[in-house]
Amino acid sequence: MNNSCPNCNSSRITTRNIGRKTGGFIGSVGGATSGATGALSGAELGATLGVTGGPIGIAIGGIAGALIGGLFGGVAGGIAGATVGEQVDTRILNNFQCLRCGHSFTSRSL
Ligand SMILES: [Zn+2]
Image: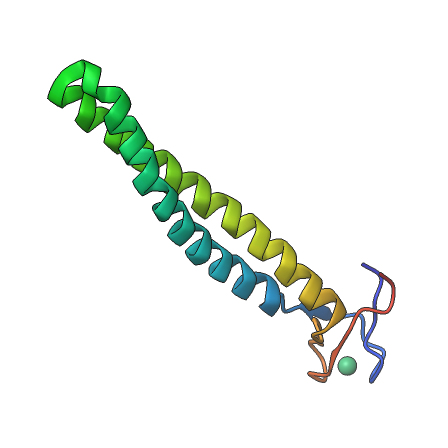
């Protein structure tokens, strides 16, 4: 990162990453939600497969299916959201802020 403030020429700048944080959060929530939906079918599948193992098999299969669906959904959604948010930061929002004069600006060299 080789930017300086276009207003006062200070090199004391910081990144705000608003889009990245927001995107990561929204993605995690959305991913966990769709993951939970997948978890229901995962739980059903696990329970169906677990039928051969009796009541314990149904319980274990259901829990495993739900856990895997929710976990993978949340992680995948978070990564996707953070990636999209990073693009928004870089291309749309003024992601850089000068620590000296408070001026916000976009990166010029990306
Ligand atoms: Zn400045």
